[in-house]
Amino acid sequence: MASAGGSPAPSWKITPVLSGLDGPRGLAFDGHGNLYVAEAGKFFPISGQQFGVSQTGKVDKFSFDEGTATLKWSTAFNSLYDTFLGGGPEALGPAGVTAAGNQVLAIVSQSRDGVHKVTPGLAVPQVGHLFSLNHATGKATDVSDVGDQQYAWAGEHKDLWKEFPDSNPTGVLVIKVRSRESGEEGQRGLGATRNFVVDAGANTLSEVMPDGTNRVIAFIPNDPVRDSTPTCVTQGPDGALYVGTLDLVANLFVLGPGQSHVYRIDPDTHESFLTAAHVWASGLTTVYGCAFDRSGNFWATEMFQPNPAGPPGDLVRIPFSDPSSIEHIGLGSVPTPGGIAQGPDGSMYVAVGAPNTAPASGGVVKVSRTG
Image (cartoon, rainbow, N blue to C red):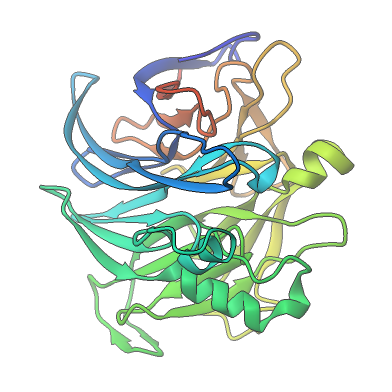
């Protein structure tokens, strides 16, 4: 794994845990301490063609024994290699993974309808779909065609953004219902779960209902110079959902660093999807992954935070009680980070080299407190 320039703050230790991964994006731990990693896949460009496809995307399950990670299973998925989207080459495949108890879900980027608009007939049956993974075997079961539903939704709301229709589901979250709730699908009992997806193309947070349909809860707003690009979703101590934004154009090309936001959204809001997202924190740069730790601190990875001494990337921590207080951790030691999750040992685990196209150049690092 690459790491160059700078060093972590004195009170934090950053230790490599995994290496040799291809575009590690989402991370999640289950209740048994197993780590799940979503790998976007390998980049195989085809001359003159924007999209191509391979079966090199993966979701991996690792167990830990005295700090050593052991691969338990790896399930292959479609991986798109895209030579133009977003201004540079990239691999787009499994982007987000989440776990609650024995339930494991993974979301694959893009949408089939969006890909077929550019490259008609390309066989991408898994693109844009949400999958449930058997926690013991890794066997995948299709849950919902999120990408196509969000692409259609964006097409019906072209007035919201000049680049619509678009869809690129990126983050997924499963949460346990804390108390009896009533919703459109009927009453939920204790022990039930709810599934949410954030779409970086349609700029939405939606709930995936038990029948696979998507219920859009919130549209993450843009302004005239930028596409907000929501990338991650996590649940806060108050039960609300918190969504981070990449804001790539504004941060890197127009206004400079510090343009990304974190939005608070009540999953049971009665507000319109146009007003349901409320800014909770600002001043971040290119947020890709986010998570709350068990002490109530909000963590976010800043995928392209400028680093004069080497590869970009940083990690921030924000106390729940003071969202204006942003602590930066590890500039230069967490290159181009992706997902983030808290492990059973209390440490934070971060995917690094997330957008890399060089083979096997990604990994996972452990961020632990030393003082």
